[in-house]
Image (cartoon, rainbow, N blue to C red; front, side):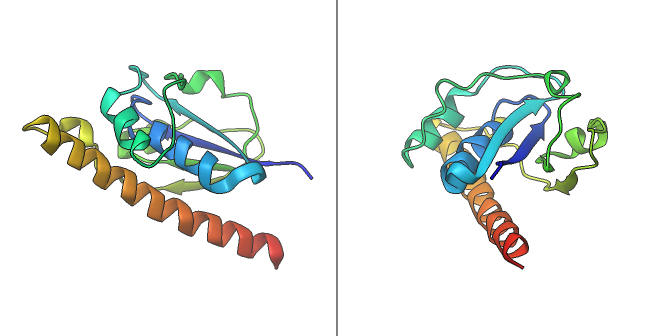
Length: 144
């Protein structure tokens, strides 16, 4: 049985898409092949790494990738997690299912380290909830 391929896109491939990639790999196990990319990649955020480490998901080996690395590849699902990426998302071969979630970017959070980390936790938890729902509907569709 082949794994379903999922690509998660954001602008910087720094926070939201990186966290979603780590979460979906963790939650989906061996059923999915998950990648993330950005329309203008800028590097993985240390606060994203820290927020994910708190729930025992290690994304320290992740790197920011350009969506151009994946443009000729086939995916079953492409998930955009920011409005800009949704607007600039290329067309992928095979007409994959497109899902868009407008997720708040915690990278703009201000205040102390604790305040900023709290914003990253909220984004992480929002993504986790949405990804669990995605997996539930994916499993239900596969079994019907």
